[in-house]
Image (tube, rainbow, N blue to C red; front, side, top):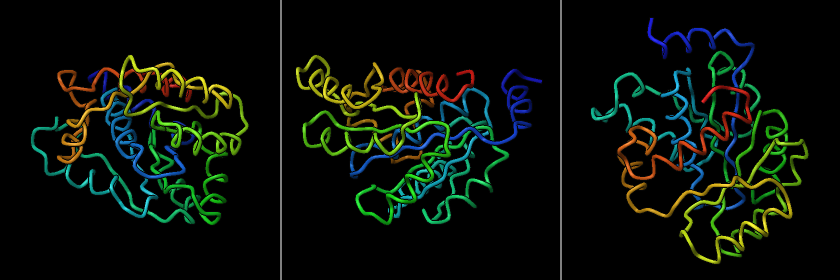
Length: 231
């Protein structure tokens, strides 16, 4: 039995899936791209993975459907289950995927009280919350207050997305966020080709030759450590 299949068989007997929730109070900050890349990275590591799409735009779900049609993606990790669901059903949906090893959760923007209540409840139950944000002050300010929704130590972290390396604004954004909680020490660069890859149902983490592969793999290792699995 291969190392990958052996790890998947061993971990599938776990009591419940390890869960990572991707949350942001506003759209357009890269939630779905982050969820899909982390999902593929976990699959490449040999885990049985699933995605839950609670965002009404269903971008995560469409990505999963396109992936099934993309013959260039490695067959072993092409068929990744991504389920569309309503945020109010989060408890039953998490129960349905309990036998997976790792579940990535894409959420709706938490801008209204209706969604916030469900997101706070679910965020308290998942293993880790990732909060992507762009580096611009408006984006940083919009996400800072939401860290208080989840008070547990090492339970949530900000991730700077669409960064422009060596720009002062990136360092300033990191300093602002550090006042409210943990900030991943890396960053995902702004690249148009990442969107093109996603549009074909692929991810930067599919292949080390793809642009953007390295930073997303570093993010996966960070998240794996937080949920207590081997990257």
